[in-house]
Image 1 (cartoon, rainbow, N blue to C red):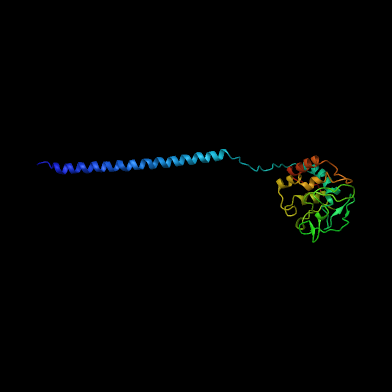
Image 2: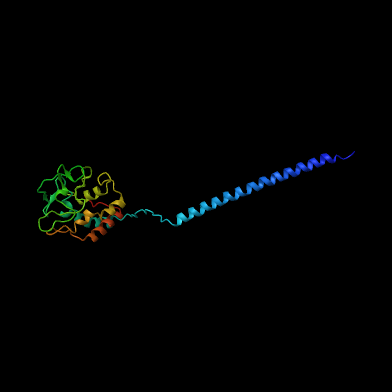
Length: 228
């Protein structure tokens, strides 16, 4: 049977065309693949660079342990400070602040007000400026001078050590403060004012440093309340 060279030539030609077409597609695909890989690598390098140039801040939880004896003994020091005139005068059981070392009602009879800063035209800051007024029997001052607000009166006057300890750590009575926030409160500007109250005013019974140490010791050892 004679060979059909013409058909064989056509088949070979078709095979060559198919081979060229496949190689062409591969050639086109290669640059695209390399481009994608390059973009991915650039993204990774950029992300890594950003991470290494940033400082991550973590809010570490405040450690707390249970030691009722240590906690209660520390609160005895805290309680002595909170019952001093410098603290109690701004934490009265009523809505009128106290004044003097004898905890008498404020001579001007100002009222607490919703935000603790007075009512109507009689605001605390009318007389109490950002610092103490010089001289005896002159208004003391500190930034943000105020009483606790109406919804969180935080009364110290007349409270026993047991009652006050329970009150301070009760979120419903302390402004929803947690352990970390309570610890930080020891350095509040108005708290620290008690140790620089101006001429003629008695200081709390211990230093601020000792108070802060006792405050933190009490809180971080279980915040136990002394017995009734």
